Length: 168
Image 1 (cartoon, rainbow, N blue to C red):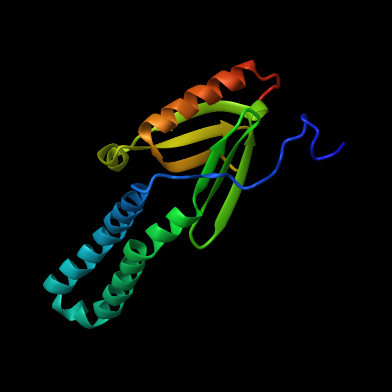
Image 2: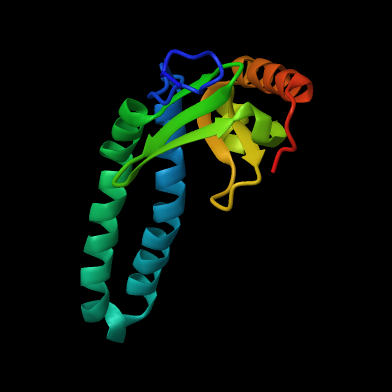
């Protein structure tokens, strides 16, 4: 069977970028997660005098990591993250330090969700989550326009319903 045969899925990288607003989502997530730890360390430094000498290194280390998560990671993630939904599969590439490329065949889809957490709602974004029987978990595409994610979820649900297969 050749690669051009219609019954064969074409393995290739996805074509579409996530929304540029996702950069702000990644910045906010990184700052909120790392910022809480940094604030806790600084407060501990301020009120617990005997521990001050031991807290300098962790404060500096957390501040450096937080700076990288706010200034480097979001732009790198935006550059790497791609997605695409076709009649045959959902494609996604994600990652920062470790890149992941996932393909979820439509015939294996069990559930399709478009979810919006508080930060995503603030930015008008959504996450498309396609769950299959894979032991690796769902394919999640973070940083989509809310309407685009809903349309993709609706389209995938319809295609999956019409596609023969046992979704396992």
